[in-house]
Image (tube, rainbow, N blue to C red; front, side, top):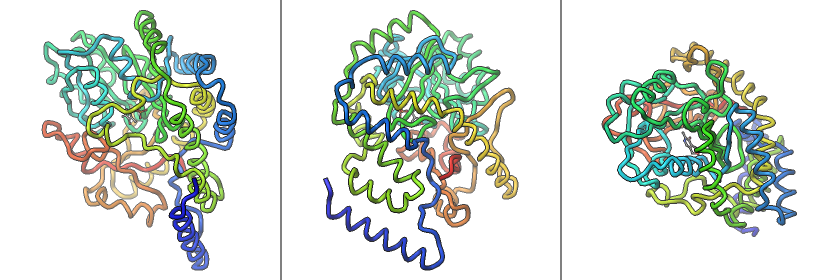
Length: 414
Ligand SMILES: *Cc1c(COP(=O)(O)O)cnc(C)c1O
């Protein structure tokens, strides 16, 4: 529905644009265009919006899962409505729940801790290291108790985590299951293998800020045939999200492309907002911030989203190469300004979803310098120990420091 307030908003923005151009500036928005969505993705979204008969047919989803598994070097892959949903499915199928403790880094998204709680397990936080912002192996060792059944390790910003092998070895020694959170790191490699393939399970996200973009979506992989059979069964019994939600996801593809990617986005972005603004989705609802389940928790992925996933997967290596080349620019910026460049651990290939840097707290608090000095939007991941909630866990000093001082630069430019 076209709303008067949106027309007014767009008119004001366009007047401001005209003024900028008359002052000798540029009308295009600053390059916070960090989306991997292109015109071909928009065509896919439009095609599925026109034909709604096959939204719950399994073939496209199975094709996506097969292609993802082959590309990732995993035996099995299962697609769900989000990384958090994939994690929840994995915990359920591994019978993790009541009375179990699961170790989670105290620098993550609230939805990760929520998935553990929804499974009925207790979250025990460990601290992170400040090289790659992964779980710190010494802190994990201290967090292990007789009730510990699993640990979630993470590869944040697309960097392979520093203690990867030490964490895998510690878990093995302690009889603990490793869950790899690869939400930021689809395609990152360590010793020639993709991350997410060393733990019992790995999960990936195609939420709109992640390496692949289907607005929302996630995949869980495993090499364990018995667990795969459980996941397949769980998925078969899982509901599809309702059609209104799927429709909104597809309109968000169109919105985002015209807002962030199209060469004339300064104008077409506003038009897309006028036409489709009502469909705009947030990835984490207020209920989730309060620890409740989102509406589509437990849902499997429908065909239109898998079709987008197939197309995004096809382009992922190319985009990851672009991200790595932009990271070199930020390496240079760090050296020039006396900050520590991002750590790439030996034998690893990162993908640089974003480029993390530790800066003074004041530079994180007010990040407007990014626009004026560098023409980029400086990111604030993570805002708190349970992003996007603010605040840090008292027992995690390094995580607290990252919360106060870690900013990130975009690695895909408009
Ligand atoms: C985004 C994110 C998730 C959750 O993925 P969704 O697809 O949004 O559910 C999990 N872990 C980390 C570190 C994330 O950034």
